[in-house]
Image 1: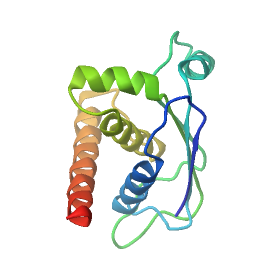
Image 2 (image 1 turned 135 degrees about the horizontal axis):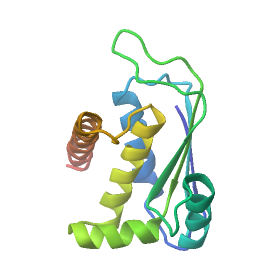
Image 3 (image 1 turned 90 degrees about the horizontal axis):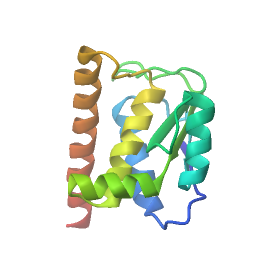
Image 4 (image 1 turned 30 degrees about the vertical axis):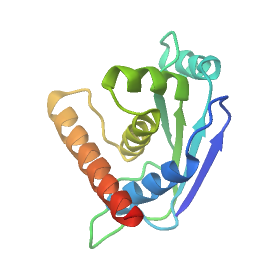
Length: 155
């Protein structure tokens, strides 16, 4: 799995944990080991520019996903083909505010947003209630399973 993380923001983040989560999520979704993913962390100004340019919405947002080869989740019997999954752009400042509101750490929020972004790259959406239910259940399962794995590896 080729996962590149580039922190262009002024906020230090635990890139190693984000990398482990991304690899875990891609494995859970049966994405081919030769798939490529890029994760970029940017400050609010850069995120606002992207948000306006691509979504035509003002202000910074927490995460944007830019799919490339339109890969879809694989199965235990058939992984996705190799290819470019795409790019995820995260804004740590927005994540920090959301984390405070939610009562958890900024890292936990960034892990949630990374998972959310990966699912969008794999074609999931939450525009309709049924889609939201499915996407958020998968997101929750990945995050809970990852947290358990992290706990086991540090025990």
